[in-house]
Image (cartoon, rainbow, N blue to C red):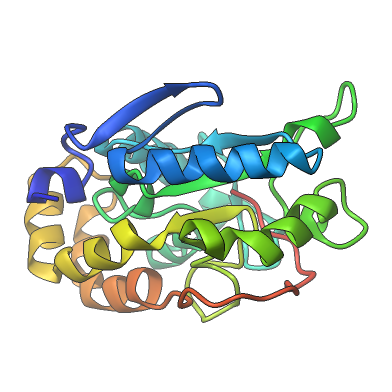
Amino acid sequence: MNEFELTGRASTHIVELAQPRCALHYEAAASFLAMRDAAQRDGIDLAARSSFRDFDTQLTIWNAKWSGERPLFDRQGRPLERRQLADSQAVDAILCWSAIPGGSRHHWGSDVDVIDAASVPAGYAVQLVPAEYARDGIFGRLSAWLDANMQCFGFFRPYRTDRGGVSPEPWHLSYSPVSLPALESLSLSMLRHVLEGSAIAGRPHVLARLPEIYTRFMLAVDSPVQTSSFPATPALA
């Protein structure tokens, strides 16, 4: 991928799928569809809640959280009042649940948030919290299936454990043949260049802490290894 694709400012690497409806990197799409077919044979309707997300969409999310128009949560999923937070605290609160524009793995089209559409009760609003993916959660069967099968299709969970950056997200899958080289290619200097010319809210605070953000929230991810357990603490996307 080139600099524009890596930072979400271009979508030339993305293909749109009709069923399930999502947008993925062209190299990830076939594997995702194959994994969906395999899951369907086991009675699971693998669907994407979020897939490719461009820079402007991520910027809108960030700025709305910075201004308090969208809710903020602490690492335990408890709501925070933006007006009670110093700007540096707001940066931390946003980064627990939302990536910095230009630094989202969703820019690459390799990462997708998944649910089992067949398990969603009528009238239920999916929250994307770890409790839903626990053994007794509505997506517990999906989680166990992914533990046993996702690696066969090249997928892994980059936020499997709490590494002090992004909180654990058992719904977040990443296609390693695309995401691993993408992470290596997205440099700190590239990210700084993009953000310096952007309309990101709190830009002085973000730029001052960018080396820390890059290391703690982007590089500190789990490797493509299989696991069958997740933390029980809540996480909100």
